[in-house]
Amino acid sequence: MADLVPFPRSARPRPTDPEPLWRHLLGDQLRRRRHDREETLTETAASAGVSPQYLSEVERGLKEPSSEMIAAIAGALDTSLIELTSAVADQLRSAATPASAAVSAGRGAFALAA
Image 1 (cartoon, rainbow, N blue to C red):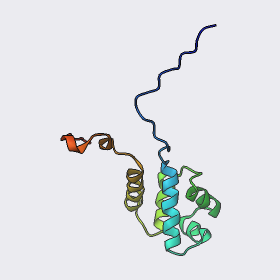
Image 2 (image 1 turned 30 degrees about the vertical axis):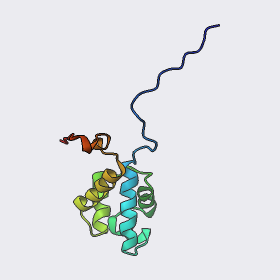
Image 3 (image 1 turned 60 degrees about the horizontal axis):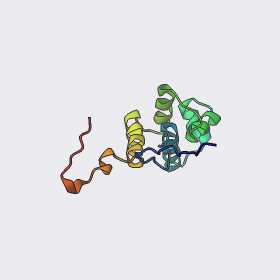
Image 4 (image 1 turned 135 degrees about the vertical axis):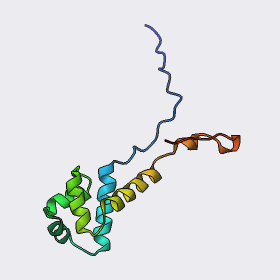
């Protein structure tokens, strides 16, 4: 029989946690804003013109809502799409490992972003 030769592993480290999904962070933002307003699912859903079940699924990250639905829910929460998407983008940025983290700042290296 032949000897088993281990397959070489990639030199690039793999992240331990997967990057969060947009729909999960969006749902967290919507739920946080609804709770800040002390509204029930039913109240916010009625203002947005969606069912409470649909809003619940959006908040739990189970639905990928269209931009029209996000706008309707944002409007019901007295926020704008830009405020909502900026908050989600900020959460994504804080959860992601920046590419420049792998570069030592002590060696005078620079990281450029487009």
